Structure formats: C-alpha cells, structure tokens
Length: 261
Ligand SMILES: [Zn+2]
Image 1 (cartoon, rainbow, N blue to C red):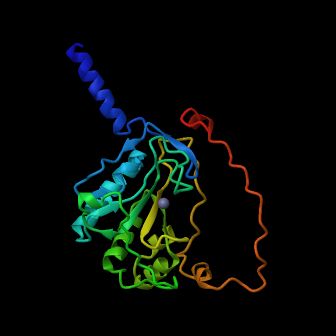
Image 2: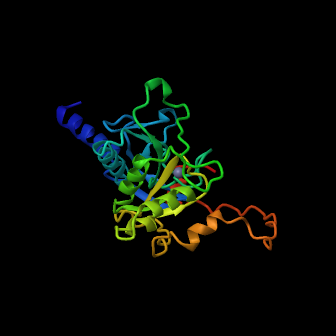
Image 3: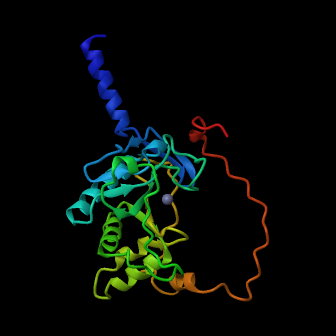
C-alpha cells in the first residue's frame, strides 16, 4: 500500500472513532446513533466502571461533556469520576438495564468518587446517599455530591439530570433564595437513582432526525411537584388495573439496519 493511501486510511479511521460523522436518530428510548464517538475506558480524570460490557459509545457532545465535567470535578477536589453506561455501539435497545440510553445522549455517573483499582472494575461500586425511608439524604451525601450535580447541571448541553427525590429536595434546600436557582429546573426527581445520576443531553444541532423531549417545566421544581413524591398514595386511588403491555413502536427506519428484532 502506498504511503498516501495509508495516511488517508489512518485519517479516515480516526475521524470515524472521534464521531466526526455521528448522527443521533430517534428518541432517547427508541433510537440509535450512527457512527458514534467512543469514550476511552480510562481518562485522566475518570474511569468507565464496567469496561467489559461495551457501553461507552455516544454522540461527540456526550463524550466531550464527560471529559470536561471530569476535569472540572478533579479541579474542585471532588475526585476522579466513575462513569457508568452510555450507549451500546449503535445505541438502540439493550438486553438489560435501561429503557433509554438508546441514542448516545444519556450517561450514568456514580456519586462515589475516586479511582478504582483495576481489580474492582466490573464489580458493583455503589454509594447509597439516600436514607432508608427515601425521604432525605444520608451522611454519604456531602459537598462533593452537591457540587458535582451543580457542575453537571451548569453545562448548557445538559437538558435533564435524573436523581432520587430526596437528592433533589436537599439540593433545593442547600441552594439559597438569593443564589442562582435556574439550574434546579434541570434536576428531575425519579425512581431509584440513589447512588448515581443520569445525565441527558439535548439533541445536537447536527442531528435533524433526533427527537426532542418536552422541555422541563419552568421554575425550580422544588414545590408541590417534588413534595408529591413523598406523599403516601391517596386512599381513593384504586390499584392500577393491569394493562396489556403496549406494543413497542418500531425503531426509526434509519436505525433498523443495525438491529434485528
Ligand atoms: Zn441511566
């Protein structure tokens, strides 16, 4: 092979793995990513905690976000970031674990910080920061977790961050009325998420077939909506009638070449 051809091929390969031609198609829960960028398993300021399951693919905006946030966390003294799942190699539905994470715009980040020894990679590394009754955070929730979530929310490309309702409540309380509270709208209470946050980026402009989600409601979300998560189910509520499982919508056409259902 002549030299010019070799150089051309090497350049083409590096462009592909950097996600230069990445495109997000469909929605977070029914989509895929074409030519995704790859998050290296070990970064200077982060580690992918389950390297063996091959879920470190995403839109280049997601890869950049993780690298930048990790550097910021390290600078603030929070420590090295433990990165959970992004998307599989073409995104799409996963056999286990997530309904979303399909379009290369979602990532789970642990609330436990610091470098893991190589032998611990792949095993469960979990720090529960919520009390047993789910109503408040426990002593594992320190300034590090608070600052980390604030840092993540400060990124423009971040649209939502899912956390346990108890975590949202404590961030609401720690953020004074005189302080900037605009980032709070992005922090969304959700089931689980006691030891990690789920960060979701908005659709990148370079992906016209990326399906947007409804915008988050206006306001800090610290009032009634949040409190409803802590109320016992109302007595008048009837048990939910078992419903037929709705058929999954088909994947967008452009994704179908990657997956056989
Ligand atoms: Zn997640």
